Image (cartoon, rainbow, N blue to C red; front, side):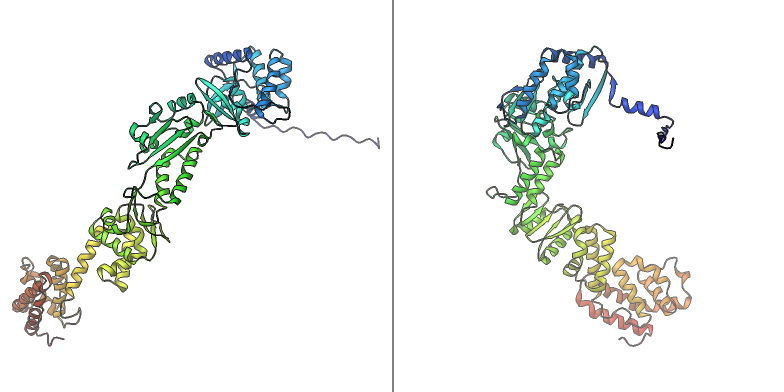
Length: 572
C-alpha cells in the first residue's frame, strides 16, 4: 500500500437554484418557432437550392482569374462550389463539409444549407439580425457564418444575398443586387444601369424624373443646369450618366439615410466608388465670378466623402457643407450664410437684426479690433489671424452677449464716455443679468444723458449748506426720475429740511392731504420760501429739461435768493 497513492476526487459540482432554466434560456437564444409563412418561404428557397446549388451565385460579368496559382477568391469559391453541388444528395458528406475547418467559407455555409434542404422538419429556425440589412430567418446547420447561411437560404432577397460575399468584397471584389438581377463585376465597381434605376427608385427619398431625378424642393431645370440655390442642394452623378438632385428640405426629413438606402444594394457598400457628389451653394453676396476659397473646397470634399461613406447623417449634411465654406472665407464679413466685402461694412451692420444702439455697439467693438474674430452660436469667441469678421448668428444680442465681457468697457467708454469704477460696475451687472441689449443701451443712454445734463448745475452734490443741499437733491431726483418720485422724500425732512419739503410740495401742488405731516412752524417758513423755490425750479426746468444752457445764470440767481430767504448763509 505504501507505493499506491489514492487518486484525488474531483470537487463536487456546485449548482444554484435556477441553473437549469438559465442554461435552457442560453441554448434557446436566437431560436424561434417558424410561422407557416416563414416555413413556406424557406421550403421554396431550399428546394430551388437543391435543384440548382448555384442559384445564389451572381451573374459573372467581371474577370475571374482561374489560373493554378491564382489568389482570386471568386475563382476558389466557384471551383469548390461545383464539388459541394455534386454532393447535394449525400447528407453524410455534407455533414462533414459543413463542420470542416478551413476551405471556402461560402461553401461551408452552402453545405449546411443543402443538408437543411434534405430534412423534413423545418419548424425551428434561427434569427439573423443586422441594423443595416434587417432580420431574416434561416436554418442553422454546421459552422458556416450566420450571415452566409441567412444569405444563401434567402437568396431571393436583393440585399440579404449580398451578405454571402462579404469576404470577397473585403478582398476588393464588387457585387450589385437589385430586384431584377444580381451581378459580380470583378475588381472594378461597374454598376449596371438597371441597378442604378432600381436603387434610386427604392431610395429613402422620393425622386421624380428618369435619367435626371430630383426630390421635392427642386425641379428638372435646376438639376439639369446645375443652378445654385439660396438653401443649397446636393448633386449626385452615377457612372452611367444618371444625375440626382436632393434638396436640403428632403435631406433634413429622410427617415433612413439616402446614401445608406442606395449603398445597401451593393457589396462593399461604398457609394463613393460608383458616384460623385457636389454641394450646389455659395454664400449670399459672394461674387459669381469669384471662386470659393480653396481651403473651403477641400473641407467640402471631405464632408461629402464622409456622407458617401455613410459616416454623416443626411440632416447634418447641409449645415456641414455650408460651414466648410463659410469658415474658410478670410476677408470681409460673414454673417449667418451671407458674405459682405470689407467696403460693405454699413450693409453688414444693417443686415444684423437688432436696434440702432446694438448696431452702434458692434461697430464700436469692430473699430477696436486688431485681429479677426469668429463668434460661434454657443457663445465662444475665437481670435483668428485672417482679417475677417464671422458671426454665426445674425442677431445682435447673442453676439453682444459673447463679446461683452471682453469688449464691454470699450463700448461704455467709446459711446457713453464712462470709465473707472462706474463703468466696471455696469459691465459686471449686465454680464450677470444679460438684459436685452436694446433696452439696456436705451436705459444707459437715458441715464447718461441725464447725468450729463445734471453736470450743468453750478454746484456739486453735497457742496451746498442745509437746507439748500436738500432741495438740490430734490431737483436732481426730479430731473432723473420725475417729480412724483420726490414726494415721499420731501415729506421726511427734519428741521429746516421739513420747511423746504413743504415749500417743494407747494411749488408742485402736492400739499393736498399732507398738511398734517408738517408742524405749523415748518409750514410758515416753507410758505415764505415758495417764491424763491419756484424761481429756482423754473430755472432748473429751463436749464436741465429744456436744454437752455444759458439758464445757468438764472439758476444761480434763484439759488442766491433762496439762500437769503432761508438764512442758509453764503453760497460756496
